[in-house]
Picture 1 (cartoon, rainbow, N blue to C red):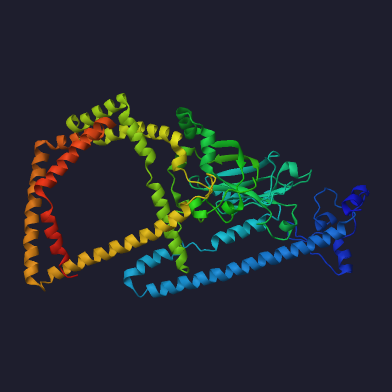
Picture 2 (picture 1 turned 45 degrees about the vertical axis):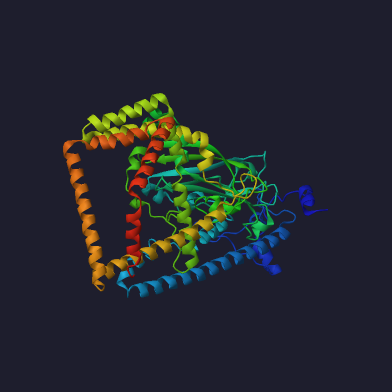
Length: 581
């Protein structure tokens, strides 16, 4: 017969047993007491020592076995956490020694002194171990229940507002699961925001009538760019009790604070502007899909698939429901223009990540991140599509042509900024309309195999980084070669060659002077408006008419090539290549 069956049939003790620590001391296994708020030690009950969640503080059958097992698990957990802290401290010491060495070397070279001072300053250096230490803190906090009196009231008063997070429920269909497919019945959640973390929070459905806390309060010092982190663990798992939090992780998510504001303000322009000018309290209930460990571990921001390499999880972790209540000290519009100096917590985002001087590979990886991000930012397919639709629509094309003609031919120059600003809402509306239809083409993906097969984006990005580095090296080498040729000509080491190049420079200067004279005349006569108006009008034509214009320009270019040729260009190129570098 199992211990659970015996416990179910046994009657509970009506009076609490004597202090279990004294009884355990007789067995040679003493248990340390927990500290109270006033610093005095209080006696631990059988319930606390055995790790039970029922309200009865007295002895129940099996508490001795459960208590010994709980002590062994907690000891192993503390040993594992202490070892992780020691390892991170060693890595941080290595990073600090590398920073000190770079500072000492750079101090002797004025050319890199200022660059090194900015790169390794205490405010800008982000250690490689910061993310791991953040995750270790999450794991530690998940084992201690959150206490509402631990919410820092002073920091909330000094902030721009406060955010209350309340756990409502977790979905039963699909059920909450770990990555190995085990259904979770007693999840514990840790919430983080702006460097602040809660203790273990429990869902009301999983507390079984106990007094566990299900809400936490956080100070809000900044709204833009900050995400609320939610991390869930399986409290009933033996792996969790032993400190193997990665194996007992059952999902998490990152909720941008801007998402809460958008959800509360709505999509109506008039009402959202009115509420942003007056409303200070924003409240919403959100149903959130939980993401796997590969996307959440030691992450303060979600990374796209080409950086994380994460695959679609085999097991769905489920959903959770949260209630968020944001209370601001001032209306939202006033906070938009506040100085960001008060936001002093570390903010580890892709935009700030530059690698660490102690690990050259991390610098190359950071460069790869920057190149990939820049490449994605330069994808303007939706903008191009919006411009094409504006030009192909008969009414909009006619309106744009009239606007361009009025601006170039009749409107004073000082009204141009106003005329161009008037077109921005129309173009933004069209970009939004196009983005709703083709958003899947330009959105960042969380998993490399979202389309059913592994994407090659990660390998493509790695190859692109290598090619970009090779191209940059080639450009730098060519630039150095051109500069060396100029220095050779200015040194007059070959006076015949220098005089020949001087005559060519003189002819080029005469040609440029003639062009400047023509530009001055066009500006004085007002004819320049027509030279600007005609190309712009051709660009605004519908696609069928633009093709005719481009075909005519192609024919003109071919005719010019036939008449003038490229003999002069080849001769000058040959001369330049023969100059020593």
